[in-house]
Image 1 (cartoon, rainbow, N blue to C red):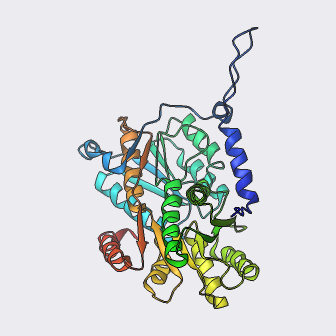
Image 2 (cartoon, rainbow, N blue to C red):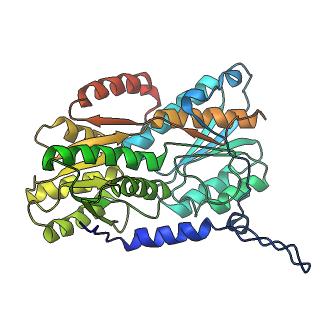
Image 3 (cartoon, rainbow, N blue to C red):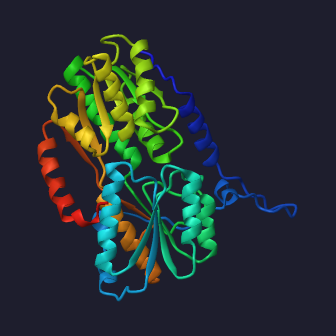
Length: 370
């Protein structure tokens, strides 16, 4: 069965990725200057990479230090989703535990507003920056500004495309897509008796983490020649735009034509579920990413088409980010350039246990939620 891949944005992104990954060759003859790599042209400071898992990261030494007087500037992509509310709550708690001052700004999904926030944070006495960019490319100038001021930069979830980043903390977003794809394949086996069917993928190419999830999902399902898929993106990253996109999809594909929809972030999945509910469609299942009250409620509802969530650990990201910033401000060796946080796939069968665990964690951080 021939694959059906309708994704102009994905094709463009892959082409850009291929170009960016091809460094220029060097020429030592005729007095010519060596050609610069794509990274050098972009202003990326190349360093030897060392990746570790969160279980391997040991920040205990910094907790034994006197960290009073250290200021950390933080800006998150947005405070609108539970994912980021959990991240900032844990970051604030960790800052208090370490005895550092945390100055935070909501990026409001606005690249200009976030860049202006970094301008404010790049100031005398700032020990380090914790950046969760709205867009990795757009934050590059602000990262370089911090570099020029001698302020260490730690990025979380989305990495700055240019400038020097001391350490990046995130889930492996391709692995998120792969884990979602594994759940999808198992569901297809249950539904269709084998690794075959049709999957619609809703992502958002401009944000690298979401783009990587879609790519990881596609790379995994392409192992199975009898699984067809279409990948498209909403115009902007909101549940409303995802709903609009899905309304058009439901008009294109009638009852029984779609087996699974993968929404590569919270707003995508919510938009898909909302569109299906409005159309009275229950002929397909939805797999999404992240923990949110809306998605968890859908998982807990036995009549909902929502089947599974691949859930990241934003509290761990917030904790590691502040610890790394404090270590960097103290001039300590960070031991790694990338720290991978764990993933958890939650289904209808496991949602009750997961929610109980998270309720306990959020209760412990209750004073840090706005």
